Image (cartoon, rainbow, N blue to C red; front, side, top):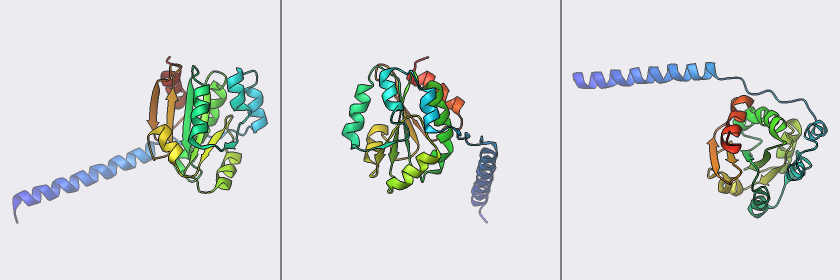
Length: 197
């Protein structure tokens, strides 16, 4: 047998073992998903009361699934110019989205008086499934229904979910691909990318 082939095969086996060990460590060290809040929409709105008018308009639509497509969402974002904005693209069938929703519930309550939050329900073929998800995981802001996924792709520059887009007060943008493992990590990125702190 050719010694060069044996060493290549051995290197392949070693690489496969290292990858398997790395994946096992990654899975075992992953933080549990953020816990969902038990607050109702009315309680969330109460905690976000006395917010500035433009943010109060978002809170008044908490938990709603809005229509209108890309033009309506772009108009909403334009109306928020000068405010820090967090846009989260999610789908009810997306397990990583479901896992991170507790982080968005908590962060939107903690930061919702100074930061605008908006959701995009992207790629859900059933509006009823999306609404059922929002009833189970209420948030203090509305989401825009995007059955085709085209609105979410246009805003986040990605066809994947979840994706979060941060806008600072000047309109600067930062895109985060993938789920947030904790409310603390999400709030850290809000301070860094939306608030510029």
